[in-house]
Amino acid sequence: MNILSGHISDILVNESLSMVSIRINEHIELKTILVETPETASYLKIENVVEVLFKETEVIISKEDTNSISIQNKIKAIIKKIKKGVLLSRLTLNSEIGDIIAIITTEALDELALTENQEIIAMIKVNEIMISR
Amino acid sequence: MIEAHIRKTLSTANGKMLLDIQLNIKKGQFVTLYGSSGAGKTSTLRILAGLLSADKGQIIIDKKVWLDTEKKINCTPQQRKIGYVFQDYALFPNMTVRKNLAFALEKGQDKLIIEELITIVELEELQHRKPETLSGGQQQRVALARALVRKPEILLLDEPLSALDIKMRSKLQDYILKVHRKYGLTTILVSHDVGEIIKMSDEIYCLEEGEISKKGDPSAIFTNDKLSGKFQFTGEVIAIKQEEVVYIVTVLIGNNVVKIIAQESEITDLGIGDKVIVASKAFNPVLLKIEK
Image (tube, each protein chain N blue to C red):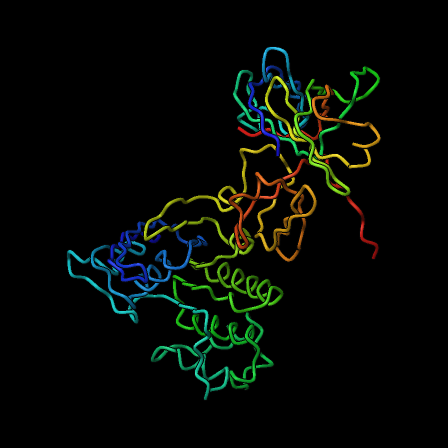
């Protein structure tokens, strides 16, 4: 599991759902949608420090920054290390908010011709991020 | 209401251990003692029942003093209104089910209770059989009924279901809950089964080396309300296997076996038999209706 730490910068609530923004550093803010509200979860408070959790298998890799995609969380990173398996490969990504691990298929790795030291964009859908206080 | 503070030095496999336990259990509550072997769970039950003496302490049940070592009060097990069910059923092999129950009657006690208990735990068909002809689950039902003959106020259950298979366990759990509610019992269960504990108990006391390390609401103790994932279960790790660049962890959740893809960092301090929380977001699972 990828774990980053940040503080809650924004909470949008509608009925039992909340869209929560977590500022990881001065440039990067990650968003998550939760079936919780500040009334049901005491940690949902602006400025509260929380951990942001997402699975390695939920990280999407793109070679270019694009606005024509519905994924809101995008982090610039450099591929530090590639561990190639038969079907799955493990990428260690170096970003300004720390290392992020991505598991993608080896087919995708080959099709995109990803190599170490290459600059990429790591993307995570808002509904794949959990938070923990 | 059970108010107890008991202290006793126990000799264990790892040397001497001080059991120092304080219990405050409301009347009618179902409480579980949870902890590893040798933490002092069974000794606590035995001291409550008067089968083991405490070095020091007090046991007060609804203002009646069962034990006060300072005032030298110590009721005998017979004077304490307790029903006790053990893991091994401890039935009399030479007596029928019915006679096993009748043997527990107090002098002059109304025999109607036997009929009532036979009906409640559904032993009508089995009442004239000897224990050896019954299954483990059936024998444990007899043991449960026998523990209730003297109309105890407190029911002590020392891992009564651990020798039974999952299906039989679930049935016995229902019988136990039924008698717990019907007779307004205050019940203390010793169990290792997280599913069983969450299903049955109002409160859990976690014991570690003779002391209470945690107490509270069972689902709060076993699940993680600090985590936003709404799809949470507790389970037990039954296998960990490395495949390619990931690990596949097999977890038993209730009667179901699930598999989870994990990373090395997640499994470094994880072993077979460990209890884990399996969490995902409410957005990820899909629902498929089971056709009738």
